[in-house]
Image 1 (cartoon, helix red, strand yellow):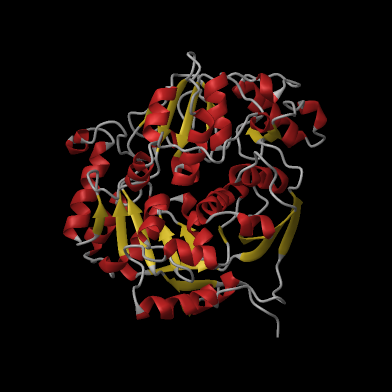
Image 2 (cartoon, helix red, strand yellow):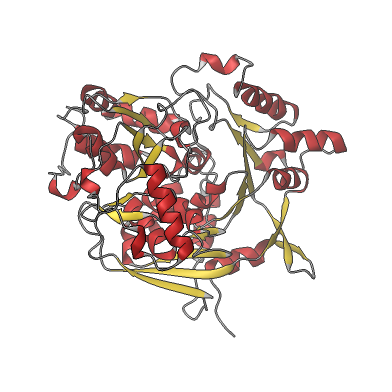
Length: 476
């Protein structure tokens, strides 16, 4: 009998029923909702006279629309704030736990809920957001779902899904200096393509993955959907347990001891078979910068913008030509010659404390280029307060960065945070689609430290050439 992957084991423990068509009805342990994809779902429940099946397992947060400067405008019933008001009304009516605009724990769903201990190894989790795969970093099987599926989970606490195939990505070599989890994620998408993981749950493996912190692993899993994956997962280890222990919603005392024993059993069997595998050597990986309009269009900092003529496939060549036209880049341009007008550091990809600490180590004692607008938006208010306790806010302000309240902010361009039309931006978010961050905005995806250096220099630079003071005392 063949072995099973960790994803197989979690899936099988949550199957409630099976259809002949191949779909399984999966029990959902945690359901996260937000202000954008939930209003229509709640309206559907009302029209059918249905209540929320398990309000105690449903958790709401406002993140996409929330302003990052002042919170008092959350009470205004205008434009996107109507969605915030709707979520507030719905959570009160259906008695759902809600982190509203003024909660000290408010933040981007995929940042704040792991911080609260609501993401646990071996659980199933669903959210009406494509980057729900982030939670796989803690050994959870997490799915991004659509609005109609949000309504189904609200009313039944279950979800009809076709079981994904299994894919394993193994990394060979150790992570080089100046290279981060974001660089590894971009490099992975570059190699797999935007459809390389389609229909699969990706399991990340290798000593490089093991060396990453849990927050860095979240960055890895967050980007999996950009390779077309249904979701992704990293089997839990001691780092995972240390991260979730003593969190507000984590079991305590004897309950924790029992739970942690079960968590440690969650692993992929040595003889488990994968439908697809990829082995990537990262021993010589360099910092990555996207040059195009999807996350697979990436190059190393010492490389150049590609020439469409290099692509034999007509569709690829046309895609590159269109991307370069939108990005206003010429083939052969050095990545280090590309100048930027704005920098955004934040999002559910890189808005955690580990990201902000890395940025502070780059910018302390330096000044943002006068031609660059630079924003740092923490992934949660808890991240913001933690950063302030160790003095990061002073470092950011002295360097010329704006340090704001938590929210999705410029990742999705749905609140008052705006880049000027056509601006060229270095962003730590996850998508660089046309107009993603504003009309005509040209987005270059990079790591937090690459974004920080670009803010200082006004262009992309090789961060490996900079002195990285790992012993920096940020409180001084």
